Each structure stands twice: as C-alpha cells, then as structure tokens.
Image (cartoon, rainbow, N blue to C red):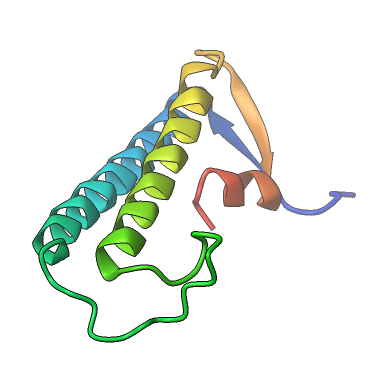
Length: 104
C-alpha cells in the first residue's frame, strides 16, 4: 500500500527547479525596483489607507520596494535550500515539499 503521493526526485532535478525559481524571483525584484524608481517622482494623489505599520498602503513606489524585498528574501531562501542539497542523493518529496520549492 502506498501512503499518499511522494515523488522520488534527484538532487540535481531539485537544484534545477530551485535555480529557475531563484531567477524568477530575482527578475521580479529587479522589475519592481525599476518600476519603483519610475514612480518615485510622482506625488500621491490621495491617502491610500496607510495604517502606519508599513505593511499596508504607502506610496506605490514603497509598495513595489517591499514586494521587491520579499522576492529577494524568497530567492535567498531558495538559494539556501539549493546550497544544502546532498548531491547524488534522491529525495522523497511530499506535496508540501513541492509547495516549498514552488513546483505546486
């Protein structure tokens, strides 16, 4: 009997997936930074509901910079995972693992 879905994936395959996701996050962060710079000079037309915590609201440029920072942090987490794979090994991944490495 098989208990749930588990996939056997080589470390090299996982590294390839992680590197693709890392590149996507880096590209997203760079694009958000470029867009933030373009918006930097614009004045806010109206208050957008900033609650003072810095989590919500703020100028569009500020929101883009926060999103870029989150993308860089996610890239860093994926880099850490990739760097700590045991090469030559096979990993048995669950659906939760696949979510973490952004396959699902």
